[in-house]
Amino acid sequence: MHKIFSSLSLFLLLSVSAFAHTIYRPSSEGSFDVKVEGALNASLKIEAPDWAEVVTSEISAQDNLKVATLTVNHASTVNYRTGTITVLFGISEYKFEIVQAGSLQISIHPEAITTEQIKKDDIIKAWVVPDNTEVLPTLRFYPTRAGVIFEFEFQSRPGWLYVQTATALYSARLTYP
Image (cartoon, rainbow, N blue to C red):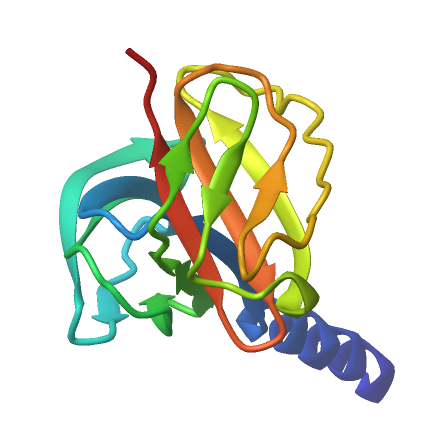
């Protein structure tokens, strides 16, 4: 009997462990949805940073589980910030690490994007998230020194440019005439 109890204890321990997800957001205000599952009789408890508002937009029953759709609204920011949203749904705990990029000031030229806000040597990586697509294009990143200006080779399509440094994440909206 003790052996069965040990297995059951391990199952309960695994059921209570948190699922961690990282969600990257641009510097602008916006919202996104997350879905969580719990037991049919489970109650929902949500903790969020003060700059993120979490609203339960839908609760439904599915395959003997309660499924909740949560809408997370966040304000725009100039500075990079992170926060954790913790959702306790019965014995299931979900953690969402929200990384909201700071605002990056850019100039868009016919052949490149330039900025004076970040020094070339501070850049770790850069990438583009295009609008209305799930496949990211290849972004070839070439910082070049011209004072404190650097350039990116890019494809002209609307979306968001992200630039990662050792201490922060920045984003800028890519729009074209």
